[in-house]
Image (cartoon, each protein chain N blue to C red):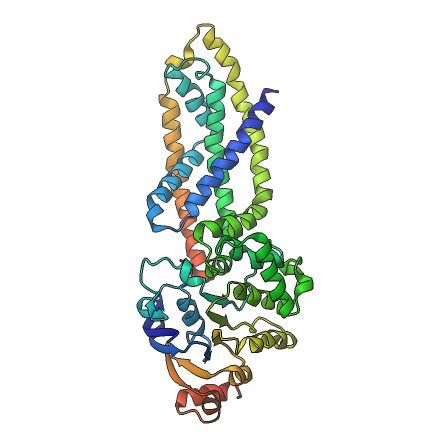
Length: 242
Length: 210
């Protein structure tokens, strides 16, 4: 099992966001999380790469409990990349520097090697002419693709995508999703929180519907979207007109 | 001329001290809690008392304990007083800059595996410093004016060397009393502002990154 969540509980003040969530993800699997706003999709992803400390339960990566209190999160975060809804590129750095910063500072790669990695990844995703641009000079879609490249450059085993198209104009969504399509099958394990039902159905090996801080229902996208077993899933899919 | 000299050597020291204080105050390591408390107390005390009082207290007070030349110069200790007070003022400017960088920047940096220190150095500080340049300039202008206060105590040094050792035996009690009264007003004021700001931030921003 690549990634495992056991009875993960997380609350913010008096609000329980995750309440005893269980999840198992195989290596190379693409799992999407759907559910209404506040159902815990984002929190789930943030707990996986330890940006949020969990209150109870355990997160395991390759069988190793990474959520233990006092454990240095940095080596673990190198193995788990995340892409945020709001891109979160560093605005004072060029595209190249955004990508190479962690390569040189965290992985200790020499500058020219880091530059090569950045260049070839940007090339792969059609962004190489933007290498010296600054984030504010790029469109939202380009910024988000750069953010994906930045996460990929670290060569993570698991990639978390947190509603990566939610802040984009509709016509820019496609170019970002194309990047994710290309990644599927490269062996990387992906956890995707999304509102794009069509995309979730197309890309996922498995879809999880979150409700009440737990996985209310999960299954193959075809099954879950066409004949959901859980009443709450049915209601949710009706609400989003899917 | 003397003003310019004092200004030139004080400014780099002030900026360095201010950055150090601001970084210490913004640290999130639980182990550094005592350091944060110390820095907060330091800033409260230095900021709560008028600069002129510190210049008197340190500029005359420290040489007054009977140091040898050249370490008994009120000019030297007056500059030290300037550095200590302005360091505290400008530390708060830097802290405001650090706080103004959105939490998501820290999240992005930490998620790439950068440590807290690296995040501060490469991601937070460069953005913070850019943002506080205008208020920083503001404070440097006031500094320039307050430098005059130090150069004023220069001639008194000559008087002392002439044998009129007034500063040495001067009664400091009124100065100290004045300082304490200032602190009684400014510290509660600062704490209340901090509390209100923290409450505001809790309400309006995403959760903090560990």
